[in-house]
Image (cartoon, rainbow, N blue to C red):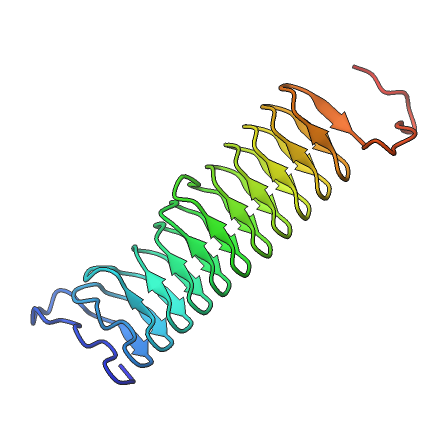
Length: 204
């Protein structure tokens, strides 16, 4: 432990069977963890919200660690989902198990288990979802969105393209500025698209 108050409460129980192999660097870093083990924390006021969290790695000032087996990097990042990873200043990964969140000021809801969010201010609300792009919003379970400013509210839906929105379930939208509200539909192109085809005829 290096720094004022770093690891302050470590092994208060005076036990040889807990609080082992912890490394903390920074003022008040890791000072709340009493019995957890195998933690590495770097950054002033980077700390836990519990006295018994283990196998965490966190780098950045003012980080809050709220579960076991997590990785957090970034100033004022907050991580609560077990087996989760967040990277980015002000990123917030709530209690979503197995979540992965990358991006400045990004957010992953507690209901977003096993989801992935990548992008500036990305917002992921549901489980098993993937969102990639600036300010992308995924509110549908098992949905995928790729593109800046996309919004996917339907479950099991896919959006590829920028500034597109899908609110229907089990639907697919491909293209920029597409709006799709129906269930079980596939929409390719937007209002300015003039032709759709390929080398061979399309069949359905």
